[in-house]
Amino acid sequence: MTQPRPFAQIDVFTAHAGLGNPVAVVLDGSGLDDAAMQRFARWTNLSETTFVLPPTDPAADYRLRIFTPGGELPFAGHPTLGSCHAWLAACGRPKAGDRIVQQCAQGLIELRRAGQRLAFAAPPSRRSEPAPEWLAPVVQALGLRADQLRRAQVLDNGPQWLTLWLDSADTVLALEPDHARLAALGHKVGVAGIHPAQGAPQLISRSSREARAFGAAPETPLIEVRAFAAPIGVSEDPVTGSLNASLAQWLIEAGELPARYIAAQGTALGRAGRVHVERDAQGQVWVGGDCVAVIQGEVLL
Image (tube, rainbow, N blue to C red; front, top):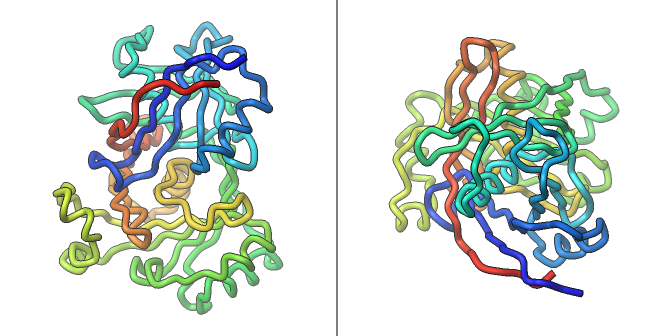
């Protein structure tokens, strides 16, 4: 039997509705079985739909299950931020003030809030060298030349990404992948490249008409990120917290990126996602962004 349940749809990594990455949040998933959750996630047809549940770990404030249209994820970044935003707006009370603890299949994820912005502590990420038989066909499917690829790693913090560090943000933005080929290869692929310091005026000129119309904040990103997830039915994800988390851990440690920076993602899709990354004095990487509620109400489930 269906029942009304509190529901919100949150746009994440933006302060301006329509320019980030949306997540659907069912704020009371109690009594729903796996099949019902998966069915609703297919129906929303968003990259992720989440279900908030009472925690089973006494250290946690709430438990979260995260579904794509094709299956459940142990962890994902923008659903973590968006669900926490929705939980707090629905009068969720953290046990420790501005420190919130989310329980999910990946374990306990700590979040912190500073003003209106939330950030999550990036979970540990496993890294490995990609096998040549993986890398070569992906490079070909992306339409890259060999000299445009600087580094490559397989990054895994729950979701796994074959991640490529390219020679520039311009190369990242110019990609026109063969998504059917990427789907057949079976690898989710993340790409990133740095904006030269003198590139800020060009970056502004590339901003979407929507970003200008809504007066998006004039933040200057250091890097441009794109995420291609054809194997799970998402040709390109607008803004991807889990990928940005693993990417930061890898490239800060490698000396390619500073301990604090802003990443842009979604530019090629007409979005204006901004991911705020910071590694603290203890070496913990925090991944944050603004969130804005777009839909609030009830859903019958």
